[in-house]
Image (tube, rainbow, N blue to C red):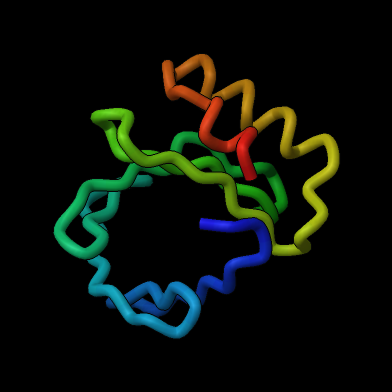
Length: 93
């Protein structure tokens, strides 16, 4: 997804640019999103920035409530790199 893509969350769904997808909690930091597993790998202390990905490594993203994560973006990238995600796709955006 492109920077600035709008996400909205409820107890049972996530809407991506207005398209709703079913979502269910599967444990601490573990979710099923539209039938696919997503893990929250990192969340900053103030719940502003989150680093997420699927455990197989095919999908990864960083979300920030403010749209300007600053230093938190670097921290999120470092965590995802440590987990072994290929971050080159993030760099193309």
